[in-house]
Every structure is written in structure tokens, then in C-alpha cells.
Length: 269
Figure 1 (tube, rainbow, N blue to C red):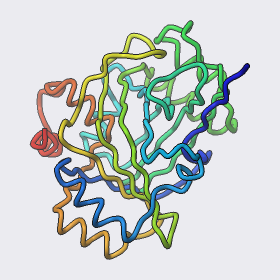
Figure 2 (figure 1 turned 90 degrees about the vertical axis):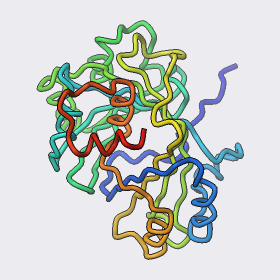
Figure 3 (figure 1 turned 180 degrees about the horizontal axis):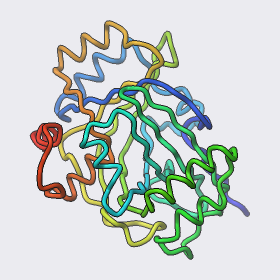
Figure 4 (figure 1 turned 180 degrees about the vertical axis):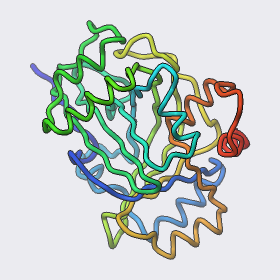
């Protein structure tokens, strides 16, 4: 008997563009944040439709970067336009039975666009060594020729290598009156530097312990009530990605000369 496959927690669009802004919040204020949010948002309806009673789901990503960490250094240098490549699953770990996606994430200041390249179940196997995972994935993704070509160019230009696992639990919410307004609460951030294999469990280390990442995702400006929450809870805006937070938590002395942003980031650790 073939077991039913669990689908991603919400339909995964192949391409989208939106504004994304992140904030850091001490975990001790999470209950207060939720009390303030609930009059205006509801749990993601796709989790409700799933029928399993879940209010959170895991997100696990393998990030690819150059040997000299070009992606991380572009962020540190303050470049407004940046791109990242990652392999993602909505499970606690990658497996042959779970859907996975190769994602190209592009950011220009606060505006983010993504393309998701689907992989059929079974296309990821434990038989492929880590140094060849990206080549294997690029040969099998299902996407337009243009998007696949962009991923191939990124892979060749930067000689991308598997760099870090990033994992967390996500609680998703949408606006009661505008489902395009989305807030995610990501907690229990964990990671691993240079993972030895893709499949199966790995000893991930906690990162940013005691903090959650609140992310606002919308097509237009944030509503006034959210600005009030930002001010009342003193939410701290951060330009650091979860990839950067994880890598810099695992390797706190990665850069000899720290930028102002990195010094500010480390003040929360």
C-alpha cells in the first residue's frame, strides 16, 4: 500500500513579487504579539483546509553559496540588489517521499521576487554526494527554460556549493480582510554549517536563541494597526536574512572587519 504524500502547507506559486520586511522579537513577548495580532489576522486557511489541526509547520532549506560566501558578503556590503539559490522542503528533513523546490530569491531593497522550480517526488535520493546535489537538482527541475537558465548561470558564475542548512518552525497568518497581507512568525531557528549529507536527520544547532523572526509580506504598505504594534512592542527591524543569521551564529568570527549591520545583529545574540 502506498502512503499518501503530504502536500506543502499552502499552494506554492511558481513566481511572485512582494514586499518583505523582517523584525526580531524576544520570545518572552510572543504571547503579547499574538494577542495584538489576532483581531486583524487569522491562521493561514490552507493549514485549516489540511485538516490535521496544525498551526505551525517546519521549513528546512539548504542554501548554496560561493566558496568565499559571495551571497553573504553582498548583504554585508549593503548591495540593494541580491540573489540567492536554495533547496527547500516543508518537512523537518529532506526525504525521497517529500516534495521539494529549488528557489531563486531576488531582493531589491524591500521588494522580493521568487521563482520556485519544482522537483517531482523521488528525484532527490540519498545516493548523490553533497558536492553534486545542485547539478543533480538542476538536471531534474520542472520550470521554464528562462528560469532554469538563470539558475544555471548562478551556479556556474559563483561555483555554488552547499553551504548551510537552515530550519525553523513557521506560524503563518493572513489578514482577515486582505489575504494578500501575510505575517509569519518563525521560531526555533536552527542550522548546520557545511552539512555532510542531504537526507536524514542532522545535529542542527540552535541559532538566535531566545528570539523569533516576524516577517511582514504584502503587496502594498502595511496597515496602521501593524505600525502601532511595531511601535508598542519596539520591534527591531533587521535586514539580515535567516541564512545570514544562521551562518553568523554558527561562525561568529567569520568576518574580521564587521559592518555596522553585523555589529547591530550581534547585539541581539
